Picture: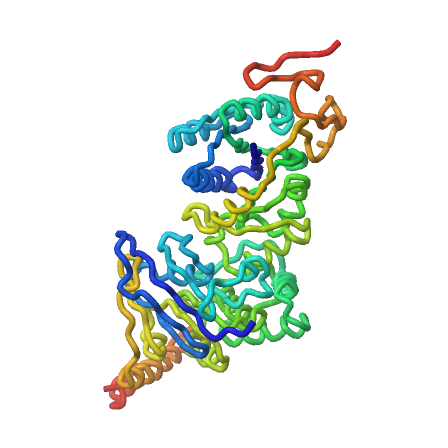
Length: 266
Length: 231
């Protein structure tokens, strides 16, 4: 089934009041951020999308695919599910090896040549992590960052899902700037729950959450997009520092001063 | 009347699923009775009585296997629910996981948690393979990928309908309720679906008919303690 549009029909906030944003339409290729303080209902909103809410979740929202109620087979057959949801879990409970887990997942998602798919996932994931993932290790042995990297790679490659929902990937201990660059090569609908200005300012628009309800939908201005690019540059500098400290180097004040003096930041 | 038999390992979320189901079925005007079969402690009968004001009771199987206890008392319990004009929901402890409490014509629901090991579906036998539906709970605690692999491991163990639920928040319960509404009424005589392993009593040697009056050895009724019947 070709996915062209996902619609969120508003429900109710935690206090029972109707959501101020009553409809959001996501077209193929759109990048949406969901922002708001902790506890404002961001994760509940992407879970509603991931579970194809039909007024059967606490928010009473409805999700439409191509303007109609989603087929039940989306929920019953993972191979037909157009949505991949990357949750905040940074650990696995599966007592199986990485290779066997990915092989089983590729089988049920009917992803074609399984060996090739598993190799692609590891290649993708290892570009986001510090230490590479070893396929013989148990899923339970992966670090938080490795787990998130593997889940992102899994969603993009095994699922080849047209709709990808990501919950706070900035907390994952992965190379976020690199992850965003790699994700943007794919034509999909991306929904990010995030506190990170790099992600928010490079999105097409953002939904602001409060009290469990969609409070406002803001289109990103050109000015904001320009700021976003600078924030990304700034982040690359901080990432560079992080990598140097991680590999045992010392930081020098004169280098830091040179960074702070860079006029393009202001 | 419908007979809904719910089994599953301890702490898998059986009671939470059944409370959500009961709330929805009662709202739709169905009458329900609830029986909990457990080994040595249960308070779910009070919970159902207080929350929903429906007839609810419990039995402790004590030294009997809970699935054996279920065979003995279920005949009486079905009559009790019939007199109340209600469908009967039975929640069992299902301890050794090798027997299964399901009755021919009942709707057998096994509740498994997504956080249990990936091999769980292969480790448990009849409790899963003879069920009609597997409900996977606590889906909010695992990633989508893990949830899908767990589902695959269930389907590899047995071709069965799998529904995923976050029972605490009532997510995924509406589909289970629709499945229960489609369930057929039970017909007499009530018969167990599978034979329990180990042969030491009339139930063990494969006599599947439900109700203490059909069995010999150490028995109990819904309203009595253990007693002996035989030579």
